Image 1: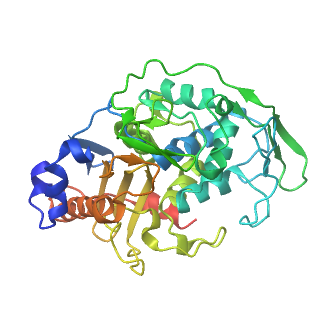
Image 2: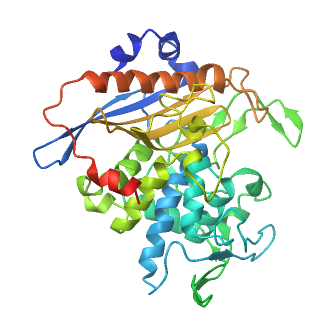
Length: 395
């Protein structure tokens, strides 16, 4: 894989690969070959991957949170409880806030399904925070560890809505209630939950970063401390996505406990573009959260209809990450790729000065194009039958 990337005409790939200490790039590429029964067989290459080296996963944590929220809903086993039923978030203690309405939803009410759509369409922070609160900090992490995704900790809320919450505040998750969409009857109530414990098994290096950071508007001439921040290794992100895109092809213990309808819903949500969604509606470019292949394209560029990218991106503190399953229905191409890069030349965190547009996005886009071009021309013994995916996208 490294030779393939280095031999591309786009110099950004060589620039990044020539400076592993500066950019800390990690890449996972998985080739997929189908047998006579259309069963996928995976061959994976890794470059720079290290499960113990810290990088900030940013919004990629929303992907496992969405998966676990759907799983929890199913495991509750409440007759009539559905992902589209209204989910009202209450406030148990300061600085918690309530969410009793959602103007972007067709019903005007929030729901697990609508939050998940917003997460994958535009990486909505409030949607993540509400699902984090529904699942609960401890249940979220322990559920993922039990599936074998042990290089993971999701321990705080995100975005402006998460700013008021300190380390201890994030252990408390809001009361939640679900109502029947037709009758308004209470289906389930969950009180405020406190999560204790800490992932002591995670021994991460590089959690003190840079030479300075901004705090409350002033420059602090000290490294930024990520030791209490979220983390998901690139391999765990790749494997979680693989478990949802190919549930029958991974060990049962590593799967999420979802229904066929849940999988179809997730596949559509993960690949949908902002212009394809009416509820919620967003006036954003196709590549807003599609970094591989198209991340450095002009905002007017439309992703061709025959190419679908099932993915989740994240960007914050100079870390840029994408994990994706990419399909070209016309060419019969499918592959997985996950990558992360760190672009913070001034070594100052929280100042908003990062090289996303000049280095990060061009690198991810070029890596995606290189692998896609290789996949289009490599020999395959059998063309994949992707009809199940097509059916999900047409729902």
